[in-house]
Image (tube, rainbow, N blue to C red; front, side, top):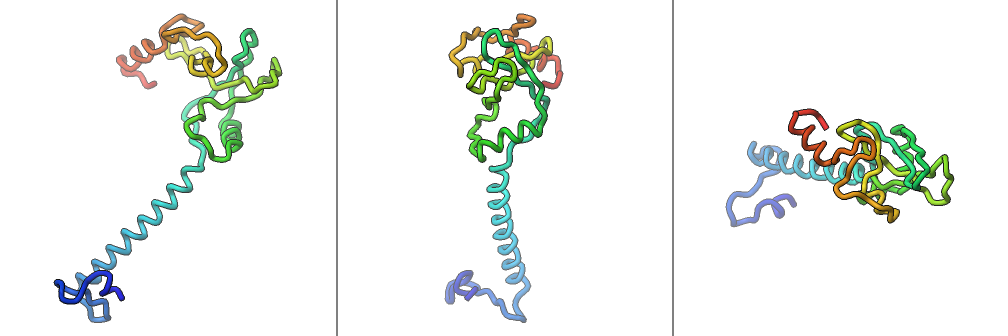
Length: 165
């Protein structure tokens, strides 16, 4: 049957897959088997990794977006992974917009979201894109509410100085 798939009679050289076959034929079949097996493994790994939550690369800090509340909390990787699991693998790029319940104001909506750390002063702030989800006023350009520095300018300066972001 292999000769029907890999070589036609009358059109060039035929594969000899019998016991006394040519060494090149055996190498060709072995190479084909490796490529097919590798493709299957890559497909399975791709399916498995698409449902695995992304790992946390740095510390996470959440805070409430309700004006005047001010509640903030560090979260562990286990808490983050548990929250991601509640989405049943439907991340679709929304992992930075996850919501947690606020432990201070107990707003019925889950108003706590992931905050970002200012590259200039190191304090935490709620970025514009998350404030916009709640129709809250934003500043353009984004400035740190603690030190008043333009966030993008601070990142550019840090990158120019060769510091890791």
